[in-house]
Amino acid sequence: MRRPPTIPLVRDALLTPFVQAARHIGAPTDAILQSVGLPTQLTGDAELLLPELPCWHFVQRVTRREDIPNFGLLAAQTTAHPDIASVAPLIGGCINLYELLKRVCRIAPTQSSINEYVLRDEGDLVWLEQRGFRLLADDVQIQLFEVMGMIQLVQLAAGQRWHPPTLHLTAKHCAEIENSEELGFSRILFSQRYPAACARGFRCDGFNNSF
Image (cartoon, rainbow, N blue to C red):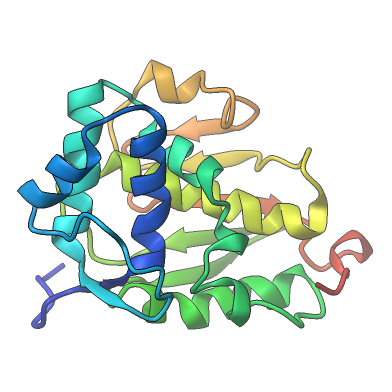
């Protein structure tokens, strides 16, 4: 995949969970933000766009400094995807889960200019894949944030106990991720082409809740 011709941009609201999680664990958040060229105080403006690469450099540096292999999951727990300020207003009123996830695919590029979420049917399974350009070779924390977000979105209709039967990550095998409390109910396949999650029965009655 070729590098995007323009500077990738991401919503301030998508960085916020990572910043909040970093502060929660006591990382020197302001110093790390400054080191990557980002402001130390986020504005809270859901529409504000930031250069995306420095945001993920921030995530990478916090992860390495604090030695937290599941930092992306921690960020997703800090603010669930349906509660992200720039996402929440755009996902209401869907008649069922399938419609919600199609909406997510449509709005994904408004959250990051290089996002490309795709729904792919595979028999009785439906996969939600993030096929967007990867800015960093080592971006496992962003991928964890993304797949946890996929789970949280499905849980809106399926309930908090729902977990995908299978998850895909492009990263190499990591025991801490495989055995994590958040993802441990799913089969995780590493070294895959895209970060992705699958579910069964998207069109069955149990997924026809309106939200």
